[in-house]
Structure formats: C-alpha cells, structure tokens
Figure 1 (cartoon, rainbow, N blue to C red):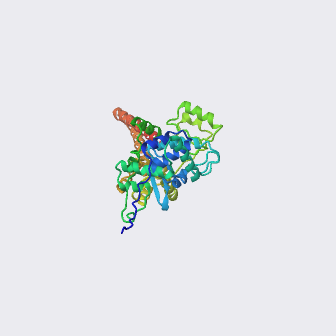
Figure 2: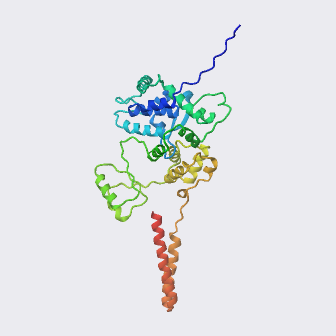
Figure 3: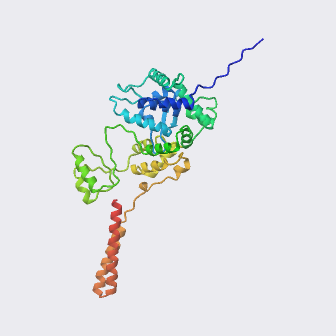
Length: 386
C-alpha cells in the first residue's frame, strides 16, 4: 500500500546568465530596459516595480537605493548596482520629455499613466521571443536576482531582507544589515568587466534626478565672467542665490536682488529639515539622532545640512557616532570687538602721555602697538564677515 507524500517545492524558475544577457541585449525603449534591470538587479515583484514613485528613488552620492513599501506593507530598502543605475538614469532623462507624466517612475510613453501588469507581460514575452529564450514572465527576473545572490554566497539573512520574504523567524530575530553590506551584496550581481563597472561608478556618483521646471547652476566662486552671466540671465529668469558674503566689487551684480538673511530655524522647521536631509540614511536611534542634532546645530540650517552629509559617509549611523557629532555653526559666537577696541584706546592714550613726557622710546612703542592692534582688528572683522 503506497502512501501519498507531499511534493517537494521545485526550485524557482530563474533565467540563466546567458538568457538574461540575451534578454538585455534585445533593442528596446529605455523604460523597458530600466524595468528589466530593476526586477532582475533589485529583486522587485512586478507590482512593486510598477508602484514605484519618484519619492522611492534615493540617489545619493555613494549609495543609490530604492526605498518603498512592498508586500504585506513592509518597507524595504534595496541598493542599486551600477548596471541598474545606468538604465535608470537613461530612462529618467527620457521620462522628462513625456507630457503629463505622473508620480509613478514607470509610465506609458504617451499618456504618462501608470504602466499595467499586462503591458509588462506582453513586452517580456515579445523580447524573449526576439532573444530566442523560453517563455519569460516577470517573476522569473525576481528569481534570477535571488539565485544570483545565493550563487554569490550571500547569507540567507541578507537574501531574506533584500527580497522581502516572510518567515516565522521574523518575529523572533531582529535582522539588521547595514546599507554598505547590502550594497556590496547587490553589486556582486553586476558581472560586467571591471573597467565598465568603474566607468559606471564615475558617471553615477554625481547624478541627481529632479523635475526640470527650475534650472540649477552651481558656481564655486563668483568671478567676473560669472557676474556678467548673472547680469544677462537676471532679466529672463528668476535667480535664487545663496552666498555667505558679497564683496563690494561684486555688489553691482546683486543690486536688483532682494536680500534675505536666514536665521536659526524654529524647532519644528529644524526637525523637518533634519528628516528631509536624513532620508535614506540607516540610523540606529532616530530619536537620539534628531534630538542631538537639533541641540548641537541650534537651528542653524547650514549646520544641519553639513552634519547630515558628514554622517552619510558612514555605513550606518550608530549611537556613538551621533553623540560625537558637533558643528561650529551651533556654538555661541563671541564678539571680540570690545577686547580689541579697549587695548587700542589705551595704547593711543599712552602715546599722547609719552609725547607729553618727551619719552621717545615709549612713544614709538605705543605707536607700533596701536598699529598692530588695528591690523588685528581688521583681519578679525574680515574673517568674521566671511
């Protein structure tokens, strides 16, 4: 008498590296190329990829990543390797030319509406036939991502977090994987030559995606040619410039500008700026981070921005890193003017006394001291205005 046994779940149907390369090589529009790279290079489900909005794209200098809410309303952060970055950058630049494009990253090329699952299935089937592959459905790309991670000896804990799998151990074990470790794990999937990966790194380090209604131009220093350019653009565009100080010789370029001095922010505004600047950063204790930065910056927006940028260089922001954080912009400034003026007045008075007494040596000493004090005051005033 035979007994029925529960069938063993078959291995997930994943594309081989050759099939995936053939699918990528088929000529296609930038949107479909980016969609395939996101599902195969980040392990997203088709519904997760189609629901991605522009807010989910966190393109920082060193760790571009996707931050979104996936299945079972669980938030996931998946880094993008260089191959995904190349495809996404090409699509985002082309997406700007689509009229009425909404918030969804992957939209119709004409109407700008959200892309449907049926359109993705049909496109993948068409590209697979052109590449000479077997039938390909979107979930096979996700399986290819997981298989590539496993073949790269990535620990199962990282695979579970990157792919958003559910498990009975989730409620028992707290899994914390740093952003840097996840980025290294995803980069193992990029099998292109080393020189091509290096080229992608250089091209993507400074890439930023913004909606394009406002053109931004950054100048490291205000030169004569830059001043002439500002004069030419002032009559045609609205220019917003941020400068620490303006020299007298450069004032002629800014006489039409309305000058606004940004002072310390209120507590609520400073907290909002901290959250916006720290978006996408892995922080061990967010409450401690926000409270400590608010205290050390004293509401100074420049201190907040520079402090967060300094912490972005760390793989993960620990409690110790937060406690050691400080910035000169949040410290109380001491006015040295009385300390300089009083000695100068005393030296000038002593000079007149020495002249009345006829003491030439004391008279010269007081004169040299006065000159030095005035020079020190000049340089201190100049550095303070900077």
